[in-house]
Image 1 (spheres, chains in turn brown, red):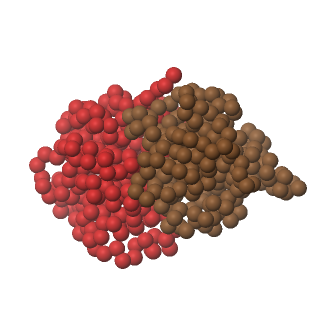
Image 2 (cartoon, rainbow over the protein chains, first blue to last red):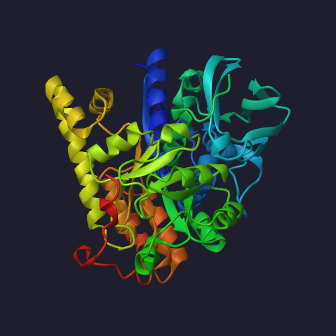
Image 3 (cartoon, each protein chain N blue to C red):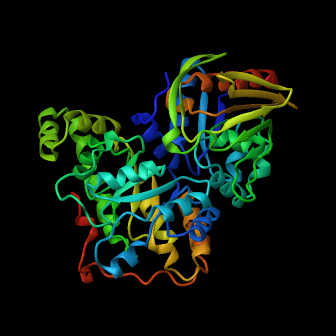
Length: 204
Length: 296
């Protein structure tokens, strides 16, 4: 009997429900046995195989994780997928930050917050990615300014990198500037596939 | 093709704010306190509602310099209020690139019959409601987010609770009728509310409002905020409750923590410790003007 994969979604704030629904749809498309957990405390992290950090305000999300004393536990999670604010939290370096703003410093990327401007500059457009095409929604979105050598680019919009991944010391990280959870399950399927591959190899 | 100002983009920002606290601020210093506390957005105002109440007279959109001052102070979204039906104030706020416009009963209404046609704007709008009918009418006018009206500036949560419950009751009724396949009754409700049958049906199927719904008006303590969350709203606005208390910094943070952990009574208890004096608050029956009754 196959054990189910446990995915947590950081649930203090942001578009949590949208990610949970996308995950469930993705798992059912892949015919994968999966459990989703809302993560609000350090204890919630103990048994998850992967974490999604949703869209929201990166400053708020970081503060709430810090107050909960869960930053170090998050850093130890093997698979992390972040969209928009989530991607900002995963970056090693950020620009246009608020005073003393910090991140988890997991991925070798430099990211600009609110890089397109305010909400009046938010937009949607169809994009091509190495995983397939989808409608991408950019809301007060960040831009990935520069990437390290081991980063794999998944999608670009003109010259801007808008989706990328990294395998580093046994960990897998996926960061997106837009919100696939509002329009597609493509990236959730990709994330689940990556985890289930690692999952099978560590179980056997 | 690149598209801006679509409903997906507008309601999308509201979706990102869920689970968060949005705080009224009147200057850069207060905006920074809000951001530091973990607010997900601020509402730029000339005066907080309790001062608007005390000052009397006509309350209007804030001075643009005030809004710019606050935009320059923080990196989180900045919202601002226009008067009900005052589409030129709304045009000005869009020109100032605020992130969300609150067409608000806290300001003196400019039009007694019409709200702003929100579909004509790129900036998303949030509007207040006291029941499901008001919420539906605002959504049909293009509102991308709803807040249940409390009685702003009173520090009294009773009106917010009344209106959250009224919306919940309305949605429960739709769910029940949908389950019973009572199409004719659902059509009658659409007619009574003066809105399309589609919106009624969508809501009945979803079992909730089709846009994000925050609580607003009268939130003074972490417990008030968590109460609204447990009653089912997606987030909380706090106005006078923070800066009319004795320790705004501490109270702002405590309310953020209580909303983030709204089902965890131990955490809310901890957040509620030693906050100093809450704002004094007012009995609803003593009020000469009830703001929530504006713009139905």
